[in-house]
Length: 272
Image (cartoon, rainbow, N blue to C red; front, top):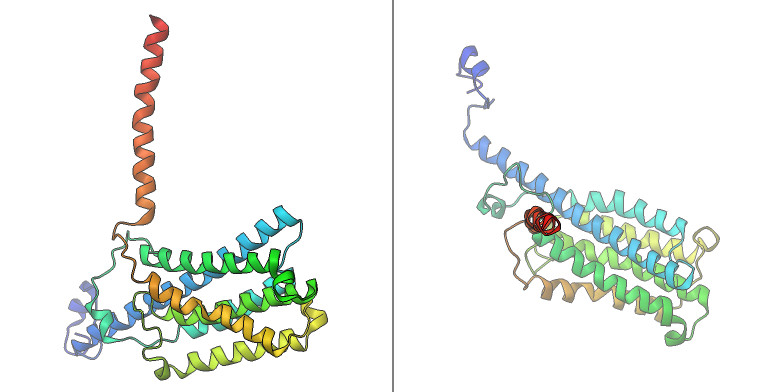
């Protein structure tokens, strides 16, 4: 106890409750779990952005010799997603449900199987949609190449905006639960959308974009909004509690066990 406890007790203890109120321990645990959970949300969100952007540019560069997302556009995505995205996902307040979860061990991975499931599903959807736009967008929408590149860039950014809602709830299907209680999240999402509109419509030379018509904006929003039903269905898929990379470790150990025996068998055959 911080008030009634003696100095000897304080020095020899691991935790000192400053206000002598034991309920403060539960408050500290709740906020600690909230911070940990918010970090996981941002990591899942950021990995989705990076995996999708990397695969899209790599496949397009290898197959067509050009990338759909320019360096300035990728820098813009990283700026708004690293700063505004981090603020949006790191401001969720703790809930009572956090105290119902088991404690997380020190050796447990930060990226859980649930996070891998969510981010791979979203990244795969974004990769498929944007590659279709890259190779067939001009013929599908009957637009010039520069407009098609703008559609790809705009759809990619809007996918991340919609995916921010999915990242709020990694396990629950209702991603809008308690969203009005976090006004900062709603405000940041609104600011992100406004900045994207300015980037596309008014900073054409800087962002290497073209102004989009209203129906083209509608197509981008519709494609990005599909991430919500995808997240809803993906969360129905059960995942194992065993860490994903532990399977790779098991396979690696099995390979190393087989190598000595096969080597000795070959050596014995050579001697005979």
